[in-house]
Image (cartoon, rainbow, N blue to C red; front, side):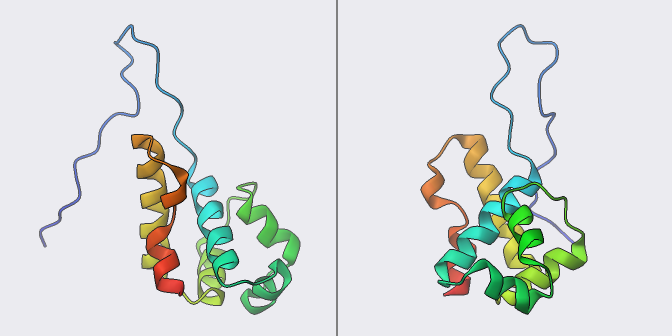
Length: 118
C-alpha cells in the first residue's frame, strides 16, 4: 500500500549552532484546542458534550486545556459526542500541529474538523 506520508525528520538539529526554533506544541494541547473549537462551533456547553461522551465535565475541561493525556477510548468517546470520526479529528490535530510548525495563524486551526462538524 503506497503512502503519501512525508519521511520523518529530526525535531531539532543538535549539531547546528543556530538558536533552536520555538518548541512545537504537544499532541494533547493540539487535541484539546481542536476539541474545544468543535464544541464551540456546535454551541455546546462543556457539560452537554461531557454527558454525551460519558466523561465528567472536569475531565473534558482538562482534555481541552491539554492537561490530561487521554486514552484512545476517551478521545473516541468525545469525538463521537462531537459527531466527528477519529480519522477526521486526527487530521484536524495534524493540521493544527502543521500550522504551528509553519507559523501560520491560529485562526485556521482545526478548520477541517470544524467543516465536518457543521
